[in-house]
Image 1 (cartoon, rainbow, N blue to C red):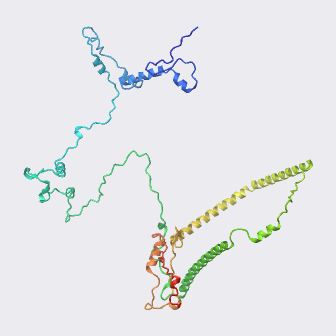
Image 2 (image 1 turned 120 degrees about the vertical axis):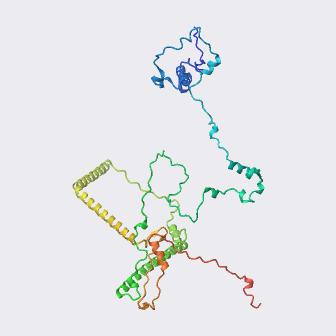
Image 3 (image 1 turned 135 degrees about the horizontal axis):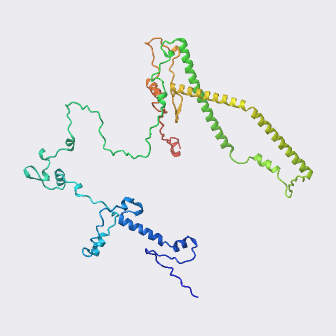
Length: 442
């Protein structure tokens, strides 16, 4: 018995192809191809038709826009009568079916009111650029080649159009700055207004004077105690400088010695090692036999396991004992920890205060980058060099050096090292062997 089947390639109501008469829908691809979407497509088409007629879907409109209360009666009853009925043309019906959705414009057409009008001055300027004749005084034509011969034919300069300035007049009292022709600030900023960080500079913490007061021992007729104290201070500075120099020289000497030792010894085996290796050579045919440990018996294994378990039990007992002792002494540990934290905080505060005290005195001796801020030289005279009078006083030190070092110590100038001029390459002269003994007798 034959069974009639419908055509699988039937079209939907709205024109989209569909295959609805297939039993199995295995997989996503077959489901999309064979599912029936007529109802969904019909509903979407009805929504589009409502948007074309009323501007939006009817379910989105309010009741006031959809329903009205008729109090005047039906005005179209008389028009439906055969006597007064009028039949509209098909073209009029087509034109009446206008969509409520606004049309899409590709670009806005500029109106005639916004068109910029050409002024007379601009028109004359364009004519002058184009080398065309223009009208002058009394409607006369002025040739472009004759422009500039008379002052009356020249236009006012741009500076004169901007305004005049009276040299002999009173100065302006308005102190308001000129307004910049910038774009207005955006009021739709999403980020909150940021504030610059308040960072203190190092120079704000330095209270060292620009010109420090000289030591009492630097006077032309100093007291004996002050002069001795200044001499000891200068001696300590020179001693520290000499120790640093000797340490650097010793380090360089050790580096050179290690380098020379590495070059002299070379890389490889010594002859003594080769001789020793010859003595321990194994004779040909002799084999080394490794002695294996004997197999343990069951009693030995049980004894070893028992000893291992006893050691583990003793270790656990000792751990429990230590834990109980720690629990008992927890209060004492807490007290010791609090004391250590207080001592650490006190030491940190002392270090900070010492650092601030050194910083208030200046940056002398502190490394900043690659260089160290100089401490400054101590100008002192020996006992036999003292003049004891202003007449025989000698100048000590340099004001320029002191001022520059003071600026470096107060963080006004970065520290720099003096760069000495490098020696140029000298030309070496060589004498050939033929001309070395030109004065010797043959």
